[in-house]
Length: 244
Image (cartoon, rainbow, N blue to C red):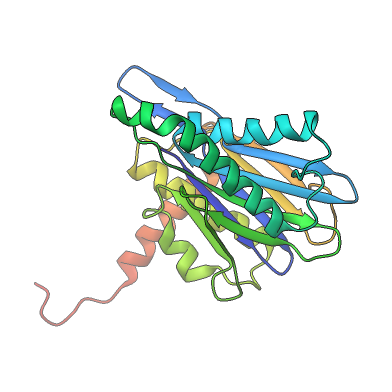
C-alpha cells in the first residue's frame, strides 16, 4: 500500500507520495510512485500511483511505450487536454487489469490500483483528477481541491481542516508533510522517502522537486514541532466540570 496526495490550488499544484511497497519484519521495499511527463513551455503532467505495483507500473509503461513507438496515436505528450490525459490513464489501467486480473486473483492477490493525475497543458488551467481502479475518474473542484489515494484515513484530518483553494503552496506543503507523517506513524505500509513536487500555475516547468528521506532535517523538524504543538494544544484544553 502507499499514500499519495494531490492538491489543485490557486497558486498551482502540489503532489506528494511515499515510497514504501512492502513492510515485513525483515523485508522493507521501496519504489517511487511519482512520474513526471514534461514538455517545457507546453505541458507538465504528474501521476501518483497506489495499489498493486505491477498493475500501476505496467499501465504507465504501456503509455510511455505507445508514446515512443506510436506517436501518431493519442498519448500523454500530444493530448490536447488534461481530461484526455486522465482518459488515457484510465484506459491503460483497464487494459492491464483485463490482461492480469484473472491470474492475480487465482493467486489471492488484490488486482486493484488507482492514480492521481494532474498538471497543466497550454491553453487550459491546471487540473487534477482521481482515476479509480475501474478506469473511471473524477475531477477536483473549488469545494474539493485535493485528492488522496492509498492509506487515506490517518492523513485526512489536517487536509479537511486546513486546505482550501486559497491555501499557499508553502502552507500546503507543510500540510502534506504532516499528513504523510501522521500516516507513517500509524501505518507501517507507508514510509519514506517522500517524493514532493510543486508546480506554479502557467509555468510549465517544475517549481520544486524534493525527495525527503527519514533522516531529512526539515522532515524531522516538522515531526517534532507538530508533535509538540499537539501536546500543547491538548494540555491547554479546559477540563469539564464532570472530570475527576
